[in-house]
Length: 95
Image 1 (tube, rainbow, N blue to C red):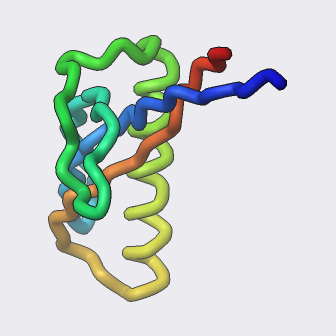
Image 2 (cartoon, rainbow, N blue to C red):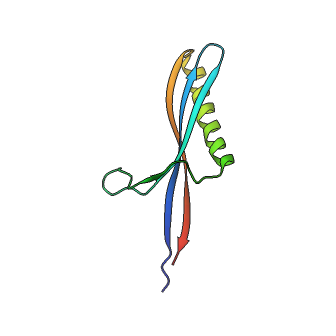
């Protein structure tokens, strides 16, 4: 019998988004979070800067910014500061 084990690392992009009446400005920082120790959510380590390709980091950042912009329009907010995390899992199969 073969057992397949997936080793997954959550890659997270942390984005600070500042929205004003006329602009949306943001700053991003990408890092890889290592697995957590159950039953808690403490990561066992991290890589900073991220090993995720720059294009994927940018896509996650743009997703976070668009989400904030849509939320601001729906809630009628015009001046806000948000801290947003967007992430994806990178998994490698093993035997």
